[in-house]
Amino acid sequence: MTGVWVRLDEVLTLFCSFRPPSNDQPCPPALHGPPQCHGHFDPPTITPRAEWGAQAPRCTAPLKTPTPYLLVHHIAGTDCGAQGSSWCLRQLQDHHTLTNGWCDIAYNFLIMESGEVFEGTGWTVQGHHTAGYNEVALGFAFFTNMTAPSQAALASAQHLISFAVQKRHLSPNYIQPFLFRGEDCLQAPGSTPSGGCPTIIPRADWGAKGSMANCRKLDRPAKYVIIIHTAGQPCTELDSCKELVRGIQDFHVNGRKFCDVGYNFLVGEDGNVYEGVGWDTEGAHTYGYNDIALGVAFLGLFEDKPPNAAALMAAQRLIRCSVDRDYLDPNYLLVAHSDVINSISPGRATHDIIKTWPHFKG
Image (tube, rainbow, N blue to C red):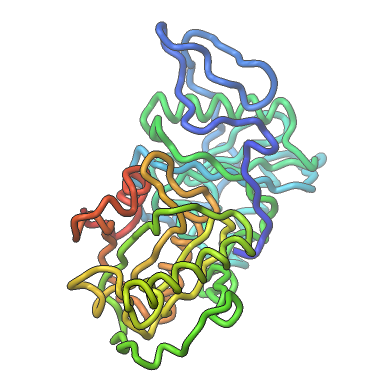
């Protein structure tokens, strides 16, 4: 993914874990402006594919519902003019299928500046909106000629989210959304160097000591990914994350007498991945698994609150990148540290999230 992304709540004041109101529950926050409560949610008006002239669907990968994620895109600067919304959507579908080679329009639903909602791939078929998340997320797109969605578009999005939760298309505890700005966030098939891999800070750049000369080599491809947390403090900035990684290496080498830092990779809440012993070297993270697994550790303690969105996305992209580069078996198994040894790592909150990821085996 090469485009710029920000959290949706920075722009739209959307709160995570939104739930439709009930008789004993207060009104939920609105996407923008004061909360609006109607007592129940009528189905939103959605223009079906046939009415906007969509090509016959060719996507068949099912989307398991309720999905744990909602990802929101904003395609700005598009003026449909006299041709109308349907014409714009047909052009977008042509671009996605003919230029990008995808099986259909990328999004599950699209929301126009007028507030109209159009069916994309719908509730039960995977879109192609966000690398690493298509299997576990609904993808909505604001399709407007403004730099920010209109009030009508925001209201329609609120209604659509409410309906999705009510009808169990979207988990009531879904992970907080993102706002992706622009189509440059979409990844064409096979574009892995920038699209499939996160930013990986090499050992030299974070100040690693030693050369790993005394560490064992890891046979590729690894069979497992083990998700871990380091405990201790989290970090949200590059310099503080580098300092944490140096401290962990020092403790592992001098305190625990490991050959190097114990993890293959570490992930900060700054959205970066930090190279530990890397893809080709055994870590020292999980007894009995070090020679067949990649140990991926979130920097911090995540028992009550999971890693932030930037860290979660970086970890998923690292896994995808590892498969694409043949360091990880395509049929890998994903496990939590606590599933294979007696540990609280990676924390209850993190465990609740990764159990929704592809290949998870609890």
